[in-house]
Image (cartoon, rainbow, N blue to C red; front, side, top):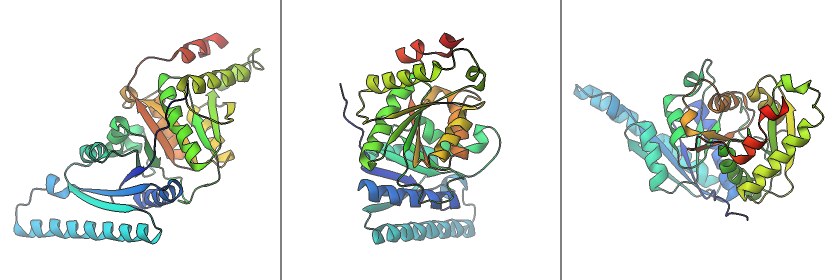
Length: 308
């Protein structure tokens, strides 16, 4: 039975006025125009919470920063209005992550958009603490515009790549991928990446067929309305490399990943894959966090162990 598609009518972009935030804002404008969605631009002003003013000059400096931030928001508002995007701006004093998360709930936000820098190292270095906490705790999907999205216009005619490892989080995320596909009139490619070590096994010819059937099961189990999905199985030594390579080859407009909230701080597994994809992807990446620890029936039936 098909379930109602998640809406993407109220979009929030959190900005710190950095270059990555600028790219994310352009993506947000393009998406709002395509979806006919409203946009809320939020800046969290943390200076007052972090730097206690000890002198009058410090207080004056902080208020100058605040005025500059307000001016920056007004400029973004004007850009949105020039493109006929329904837009509102907001500046809040506080700590970024909890303020953003509270705003998501209070404004019934359907999608959050953030930008991130190109940094090396483990995921806590790739992702700032704010972006990491928002991605892990957000009640709605988070679209991250990574450092490789050099052209903020992205591929507006490209497919949406939904990458799955058959975890239960996948069933939760496919509905959002399907909704975005439907709303943007984009094709959807369901992708599963297998390790290179499996590629040379005697059952190689059967593996793509088994995986493609598994992806069809995921779609059916989710109740999502996906018209003619393209199911693809590829091989790579690194899952993230396989996802990014496929998205680049197909000139994808968006990558969608389901991740488990409990694993976001782990140094391995789905969370690390998500961070690596975000860092290297040529297009925005939408993550949908899910709280369950268990695997779905599909995952159990089509685990790697059955192919050994």
